Image (cartoon, rainbow, N blue to C red; front, side, top):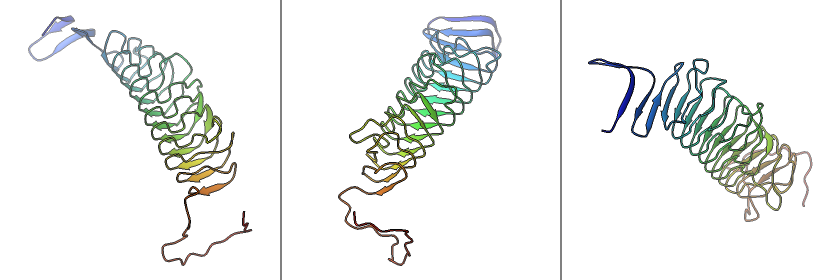
Amino acid sequence: FGQVDVAGNITANQVDVADIVHVNNLTIRGAGNNVAIGDDGTGESLTEGTFGSVAIGSHALSAHDGASQNVAIGHNAMKERTNGSDNVAIGTGAGGTDGDDFGDKNVFIGLSTGLAINSTSSDGNVMIGNLAGTATLQSIANVLIGDRAGNTLTNSSRNVVIGNFAGTGNGVTNTTTENGVYLGQYAQTGTTNANGEIVLGTATGKGSNTATIGGDNITDIYMSEDLGAMVHVGNISGS
């Protein structure tokens, strides 16, 4: 079974240790109701003051010593983050690997989600999927779900982006978008700095305060199944 190093007492039904148990290359440590399982770097800065955190995986949550109740699972998950509370980061590099500023109450699931966040105002985000939101520096209350969803956004807030490559740009690099809704694979924007844009389906939006339903392959739009819906409009344009 290899070597077990225990700094404490072993009885018939329990093992009492000071802080750390080493089993071959596995390190298990606990301090302040924290749990860390991985290599020597995993959760090594967690203290009595950083209670209720869980770190699992090599170098997960290795530098965190300022806030509480974070869950980091995966190689380098929240590796050098030193602040931020009530965050969940699952996946290689999820939640970032450097010591830049970090926010609270975020959920990052997938390879390198939230990798570049560098703001204590980056709160209340949900990023799920391979490289979702990976370039984000300041992100506030964004929901990015899908393979590389919103992966070019750098400073954005209050967007809902669902679908592979959704929330990216068509002909532009989408970096700063607010209050947008992009639903569907390649639901994209065609402008920079859009605000209040809605795009449904595989389509490119028309800019701020516009709604686009479907791409150029859509031939008919039905407002209700039985065609009985009343449509209210202010103006109608043929363009």
